[in-house]
Image (cartoon, rainbow over all chains, first blue to last red; front, side, top):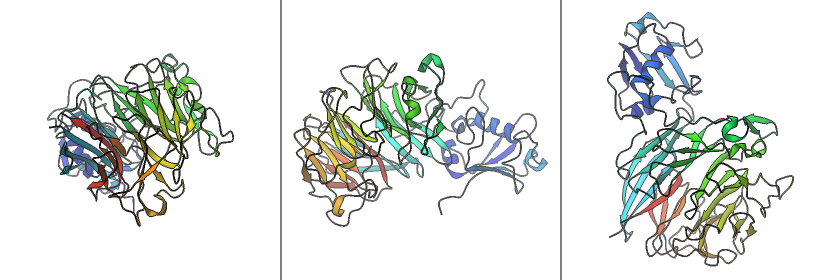
Length: 98
Length: 396
């Protein structure tokens, strides 16, 4: 199971806690995780990435194992620790507003 | 006994205020969707338990919420609430927040992908949020959405899916539309109760437009408007219309609060004349019409376009019983010193009880109500987040 940590507003929207565990088929990448996340929680469609282009929303970032993966290819394999479920994939909302 | 339900959208959530027909004691529920900007909440005239809400965020984008039980519970239309244990089969649902501009020649006459930007260059149309939701007068599942960047969308399945009414952007003047200070938003939708094919909309800062054929074709209805900031002050489009209101019994009579000027049309928008009369300032955002007196209208004058608060720090609603020009200040119960709030364009409404109730919300978080058509006012709540919108449902 892949662990995904969501920002507070998306937890409310999906009616879940801080972290969800999902089955992700195939290679573990940003794209495959987000595809599976949106399939399990369709209310999150459009809130993390654009419906059609799948572009990341500007004020969100993706982290794993202490690294910012936001600018990497969405098809780049994520660290083994994420694939093995020992580390979560984090969706982070930018801190803004002062 | 009748009841009223006031639906309030704020910068940090939605609130539902309820009272019996006396409108003396109020129950407050909320915040719903806490922490999110709620641009508008409005109930269906055809089914008062059906309520639509526009929930939006700079981080997470647009969400459409729907209640089928008068605001007690909410769903994203087409999306099962709660966690799904297994991935669903087939295409994912959850498209109630998908607003895609229609650029096909078939629907709009021609592709239209840019509008005028602040510097005069052309800029791509980019969806940002839903400003206004206008449920159909007859069908609870049909609802219109006015969005930024300015366009009109319609759902006929209770908000599950949205389709642009592309004839508006495609009718010809779209490339000359430009954003106002608040963005290029379609913020006003007025449905004609006597003619389901006729609709009025307003855009900042493009002006007002009308369709007579259910949205297939549109034309600007801005003759008589004067905007000195425009190179041509009487141009066909480019006017910063803030709000349009009409009485249901006289859909040909329209009242407008423009950036500056309060205007009136007696021919369905074909021509306008100024009725600012003795107002202390004719800048403002809201305008509304008494539920039973078609010539009685309300505005809240704001000092200027650079000072968005009431003149002299005195919050006053102005009422005209003559359809404009002659205005009286209504201040009893409203703060008359040191008041520097604003009243935004969607934040005034009227109920339809025998003694017409008038409601408005402020950027200071107060929602004021008058049970007697504006003679006396009292706050329902004082300390909400900044109020974006106020609507009321009169219930049996």
